[in-house]
Length: 182
Image (cartoon, rainbow, N blue to C red; front, top):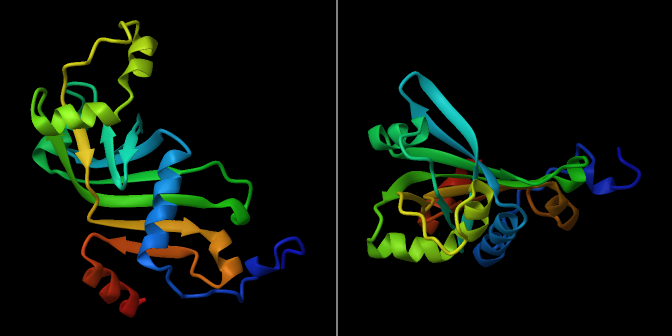
């Protein structure tokens, strides 16, 4: 047992889930701590997972993928994807991350959804990185993930009597079913 963090004891395995509003706030917090996530798709020859730059709005994420990349081709064949965001860890006490699951939507330039997404995606910084004028709006597809379900891992929750793994579903009834099966 950790003397510094007694609540990390292996016997302390709470199962209590956070109220939905608190869980959503924690998920949003994870999404603000970094802008690098790990996007996984179903490639032609198996899974593809790559680190990508992302920006979020509430629980939706936006990625500006490279044209004709294997990830784009995979999403065009099969839109199912997962997306993981993890923050630097210095032991179990600081483990804090999410996994998102859903169907990726490739937004075409000039559509209202694309226009909105480009107000979320911070392209000026990316433009600078690739030598493009920071005020030039890129004109490629934008990926949006509106997750169907999210799993949050945060061991610090155990300190307050909550499960280290929390589940969110777009449909709250699905969350209730999932919790009943755990």
